[in-house]
Structure formats: structure tokens, C-alpha cells
Image (cartoon, rainbow, N blue to C red; front, side, top):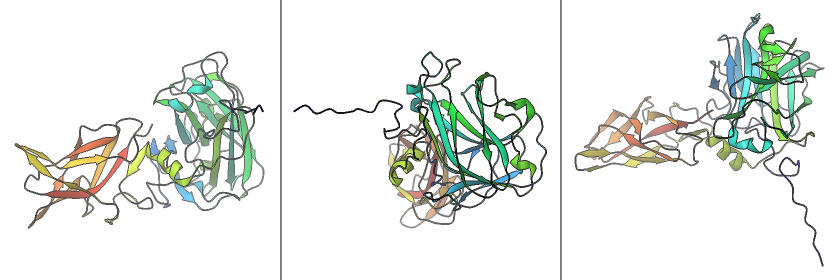
Length: 354
């Protein structure tokens, strides 16, 4: 008997890990634990979702429990004023896909694969909205548009993106694809939807400005970017798997629902200290997940002091300023000046975001 087996090829809607977006269902918010925040430009809110803002304090972000059927969470943006966007200004929610995760698409050469973007979106406003796909250098841009027909109702959208046969597309641990959803972009950084352009464009011409209406809301979830010309159902990955994918870029000692710097000792890391010769070694922090790149470390003591850990002996304790040394993608060493102490403890964050 001959058994025929069909093997799914790269780009097929049948393969697992077809969604190039991490945290597309907006489940993880390690930094804010669901609290509203006012983002600065080039900072992250929900895991893997960055804000790019020409002006500060024009919007707030928040993980929301308002979501369409089949989803638990969405990413909520709320306008904080009625701001008139300047010609070269942008207000973007951005997801950067690592180059390793788009290498198979073959962008920048003949034979580049098409991709399909799909997502659920809701706004208090109606009309044409916009966004763009760009490369790391932001000299190749594909503006796209979609229509929200009914206010305050989730609608499902799909966008076809032709594979780009030009430009430079990173296929290492840098930015492979930059996906932008605009909530306000000026005329000189917008262009006609549906084509590739040489230049940096963040949105489609004439798109609705969410930040132009005080109190306007914009929710998005179920974001999927996959190879091929057909949108498939949203790919849910197991909770632990998706968390591990997020931790490649951002990991913390705190419990998942605890904001770094909070007054809690849950999740404390304790290191046994020793002296060898005249050198003091507080110990090594080993990460759960190998990082995308050497991370930036932040520390808090068990007294919640930024930049310090608490050092203990049998009869005393002290708050000691600490820093990271010999940091790699899998671990970091801690250094401090408490040579008479036997152990130290505190909290930490490792960030290796794109």
C-alpha cells in the first residue's frame, strides 16, 4: 500500500506559525498590566507593540477587554485632544517583525511572496483609515487603507500586500518588516494605497485622523500577517508559547500581571554571593528565553528602589547600587559593592526590543 502525504509548503495557510505577528491577540501587557498609559514616542505599550508619535500627550494606550467574539483582549487607543496633524507628523501603532521571521518571503528580489494582513478593528469614528508596511530603512513603503462602516462595532478587515521585489529587506535579527496602523498622519507622509513606493510613507492619503477628535477611540486585535494571497483564521498559539515569543524581546522577574517597580516581592531573584581573591561576585541571572540581542537591564531592590538590590548578611542588610556586566543573550552577571554580604535579592527587566 502506498501512503500519500501532503507536506505544507512555506507560505501555506495550513502551516503552524504562519502568523508573523507576535501578540496579535493583545494578550500580553507585561509593562502596564492593563493600566492606561500615556506613551512617549518609540516606546512600547502591550508586548511587541510600539508607538511612534510626533507629539506627546495626544493619546493614551491600554490593553482592553473589549474585543470581538473569539478574542479576550484588544489594544485601545484614545485621543486626548482634538489635534490637527501637521503635514509631516505621524501618530502610529507599530509592530516590528524580526528579519529572521520574514526571510522566507524573499522580499527585495524577483519571486518575492505576497502577504495578507488581517485584523479586527473598531472605532468611535467611521470612514477610511490607513496604515503602511515598510522596511527597516523606511525607504520602501506600501500604504494601505480600509473602511470602518459602523461606529463602535468590531469589523474584520483584510489587506493584500504584493511582495516587494526592490529595496533592502533585513533577514537577520534586525527589523524585517515594520507594520504601521495610523491614527493620524500628515499629507507628506501619506500616499495612495495599494502600491510600493521608494520613500517613507506611514499611511494612505486622506485617512481618518483619530487624534483629530477629542475622546475618539480605536481598538484593534487579531492582527495576522501571513504569506499568501488569502487570509486564514487567526492563529492562536498556546499561552506559554506566545509568552516565550514575547520574552525573546522583553522579560522580567516580576509576575506576568505585575508592573515593574511595583511594591511587591513576588518573583524576587535571589543570588548567593561569594568572594574569590579580592573580587566580589553577586551572581548570575539566567534568562528564561534567549534574547534577540544583548538586552538592556533594569534593576529594583526588594524595597522597590530603582537601580539597587538589597544585600544581606547574618546581621545586616543594605541597599546597594548594582549594574549588569558580561551581559549576553542568555544571561547577565550582576555587580555591586557589598563584599561582606552573603546573598542579595531584587527584581529585574531585560529588554532587547527592535
